[in-house]
Image 1: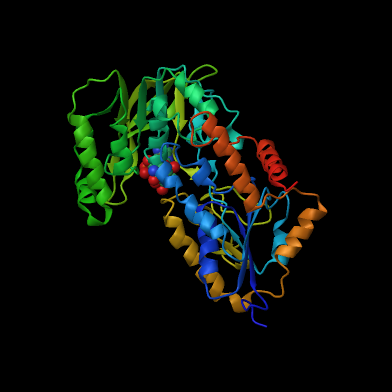
Image 2: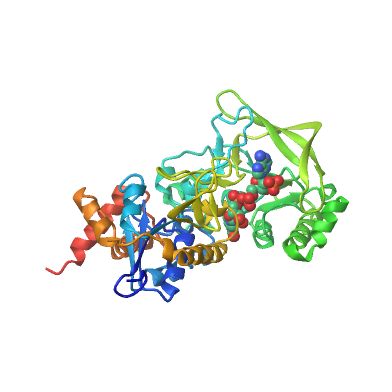
Length: 464
Ligand code: NAP
């Protein structure tokens, strides 16, 4: 009996319910094979970074969950919420239950700067701030001292822009979103007046995109300040700006020139600082200032590096966010490339540290390629992984029991599993709690509350 026939469906577990997990499920369900796809998610709620990463004022980006819901309703798909590999089921168990396992756990850690003073209070990972305002359970209890006048954000990607925009957006514009209430209350009392967005390379190398950059210039009461001297590009940067393959660079420069041309008029400012890298954080107990070292650019167009000069400036700032990239974390029982923060793989086929394939194991999304690209980038990435998996069908071990074996193992431990219908009940409760406060939704920020909400709604929905 060949795997993938109606009599012997291909049984796949996907670990993680963010975009790459859902796109992998879609690619499997779109194949000509008979497939059973079981998606495991450690939280009771799905969507990964779409729920806990996308900024609350970017509702349009979140609408991709409609597509994911459609995938979840397809025949052959099953959601196992509140089930974590390594906590509730081991890698070895999954391997014995399924023909293949696709790891789609994303990158929920962050990169450190590796400079003295970084551990001081008031220095935060941008990822924690993002998780905090988005109601991620692990971050809900964090505190950010928004009594400070000056904040610095290190890094010039779209996450840095998100952090900056959330600090500067009038709360009236956030009140109706699904921002966590604890964040809304704290931001309403914020005294932050100056934000410095610090990049080690130049404006032609910044990773943010024009739409996000332009949005910074629309925040009422705030002005984006750019030093015109920073826009004088070296030859390699001019070549980068003229490269038709990266049109966003020219567009970014155009937006930056617009900012640089405006005389200062607003009381509050976002300063875009280029070719400066933090080398030390100062303060006693908590951060008071940063030393920024001037950088010059070296190397050919497309791969210019920031090289330190001897020139240093002091930036007084009572709040610092490092936004220098997310980082994947390893999973018990699987190899992990600690330098790159990814599971080693060849086109999605998981390998050991030496490059030898681990049959039946696949990776997709940020845990496969690192934290790059937009939500849609994960679609192509997951299609590639699923293509490799389908090519490997003759090599996959059979038979496998799949879903029934997982259900039995979890039931044997009395583990509470959240189905997709349960999640829809949780979501309904979040929307109705939000409505009372004039918001799109009030997310539960506590796992126990999520489980209770599903339970309560189940009881309510049960026929008498
Ligand atoms: P990113 O785009 O990779 O940007 C990281 C930034 O950190 C870069 O400016 C990088 O500079 C800088 N950096 C790295 N190491 C540094 C160091 N040691 N010292 C100083 N600066 C350092 O990462 P991200 O902002 O976390 O975003 C991750 C992905 O999510 C991106 O693909 C992003 O586009 C996406 N995203 C999209 C949206 C949206 O579409 N609205 C929103 C948020 C995130 P170098 O270039 O010099 O390395």
